[in-house]
Image (cartoon, rainbow, N blue to C red; front, side, top):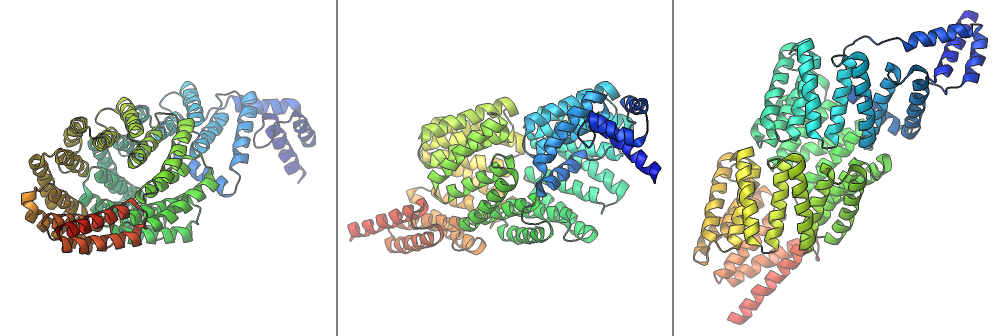
Length: 626
């Protein structure tokens, strides 16, 4: 027993001497050394041995996931601030004894950088990540597993800051080294290939992402089997790549396969299964199959609340996804309640300036905008932009997204000069950072063209919209939803210029593709039919009426009688009746739209006020004709 206590005292003397796990304290170290009955020279010898110890290569693990879970654990136990300070203290103490290139302070710095990144402190996290990577290159060489791990972690930090080219360079370097060292069918290589595929995907390089992820998936299938967790994760990533390309059927098929296998192998309550169900719900949402998406998202949210708790990040993400689907169905009040709850929880657990808290606030802004609460949307939107500028920088993707959203709100408020200024700034920044044909750049061009349209600057709107349409065809292909949307936008601009023939031709092309790809009653197909009806001339009122009756009935059946899109088509049909002189039919329909909007949106919503105006105009026409 005495020998055990003496050895323990010597270990404590060692720890106090270098500051490992305890405060660096020479006096306390000497007390423990005395209790151990060992000599000072022995302690110095052990420290000297540790100084010159070099870690041997070992198999890499997904350090990013481990550290993120560790940070979440500290947060849940309200220890994150204390732990962060402890890491800083320990790094400084151990570096003063062992040197800054020793593997222990480097490991601690790597862990601290990931904890900081999890809190949104990406600049400091990146600085630490660079220090670790460069030190490991110098000490171990560029092909050591420790060096490759630090490069992979730094790439993810670049990724979160929108420095995707930097991330790509590191990901390529890691993958090529893994291929050289381990070959194509090694877990290290497959992990680095998957990371590079994700980096390609976020840059809109979908073909490159798809090619890599298919290799990863097939390798995992052959090596681990079709039901292994890694194979299922790869299938989920490939489904996401298909989704972003608008290949929704293929995405759905993969998601269904992965989800069913995950249920069978891991169980319904496993986090990976729940994420897979969430991905399938997202695909349904992209397909406008909102009821099916809602059903799955309610299931995921309830299970996560039970299994993970109300404050877990995955639970909050599931609540956010459900809110999005409810909003798509026009249930803005329910969506607002969920989004407000998510925002307040994230503010309480992460802090008000954490990127996830700001993302929640941004979603709430979009809901306010749809509710016609534009002043509230502008007030909150301005706060978000300023915080993003301060914490992430003026050209971070999240900052630019928040500025683009604020521009949309300014457009609703008819503050068109401010909207134009913001849209132009976002477009130019994205051109510079992302390139001319990146999806984010094209989206910002669409927003600027929309602002030009509201200003009546049709030539500028047409020029920009034409560029977006041509670029979208090149980047996405003719059948992609974004290409079809950009073509419809150009048709609307032609229509507003009175160029109804060319507008109608363009929208007819869009409608034909949507009927073929999506089906006759898909919500997006019905939107094109509605648009096509608006391009009919006075002499073509019969054709417009036929289209709008079909759209209205289909929307009632598919979306419900109270959905905002159903009410829009009913209002358009009422307008067509008025043009045909069927004023009683127009009055009846407008009155129905007005009452429903009062019930669903409230009496002061802009759409409600517009329907009141339309009904008043129809009654006035009847008085005149009477």
